Image 1 (cartoon, rainbow, N blue to C red):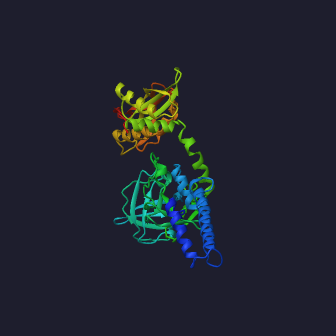
Image 2 (cartoon, helix red, strand yellow):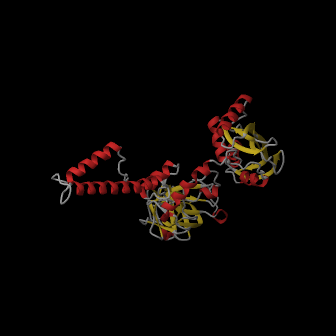
Image 3 (cartoon, rainbow, N blue to C red):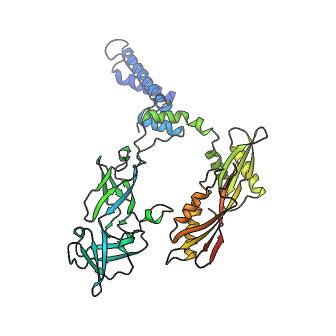
Length: 457
């Protein structure tokens, strides 16, 4: 960073002036070349010029409106605004392997082998690893191709699962792995590196609460290899691997890549730095929540509400796993009150939690257990009705919860359901929903599994 001239004391300036006078004269004469008067004038002019340069440098170093470059970065930082550096874009990438549809299966075509009769066997070679999978993804086999009796016949070791191609939409998918760091390319030339390995035809789940059908898609997150906004490419513009791989028929990004940013320009940094004190002084809900959390780490959420008492702020606080005691509430309100710029009195109150219990009668898939279904459904419902992110006062829609239960792995169907205390659960304006329990009953066996959930973060 360029630094301004050093600010000298009066004595140091006088000494500099003396040294210049001595330098500019070599004989004691008042007038003429190298005279005392001429040396005096040149020394004084030099000192005046240095002062003028120092004045400009100080303006650039101190004033936000005059600062530029490195000085602007320093001045803005002193006002609480750091210049935003370049950031890297991220993209959600789907990888599609080559595949063929199974028309029929010849069981025991040879000792220890079954034959898969497919619509296009030219995509596969002997020695390729493939996955045989029914349409729902509930039955799968991983096999090596041992032989190709005909162009459209694939011979593999005896299948473990039972398939009915006429109704199950059975496919043979090429199985190959892409490593973390492998590159995919967009049409504008930007490359993205996979942040995790992907094995095609496997269960590559990267999102919380994925349904089985979505989790069967081969996908991964990828990051641009160069920082900046050039990585924010549109959907479907990532369209190929940098190095082609046999068995991969397509790669694409179903949504746009986001998060890439260039270095913040000077005019934006100057604006943010100028307005930062005003923004900091605002009592936003996020600022209040940060203050409440600093007062007590068990504060999960905080919300300010209008009080009927003039000069008082009501602050609703939600505990991570219970409720605050009177002494804890008093400590929170004192801490927040001392740091408010508005000078309001604070009244800290425990937020009310509206309890939600779900009961459903289900049909369990073959091979699945009732307890396993309960655990999977409970996880999905708890993630959906999440007190950490749920909007204050937001109604819980029963239809949304029913869809989550229906899509749970292992549950074939939901035959009846009950949502307590109401179908569409109304939540008070200063309240949050709390998913406290789930009961599942197997309509075939009559067995029931239920338990309460004590959520805590």
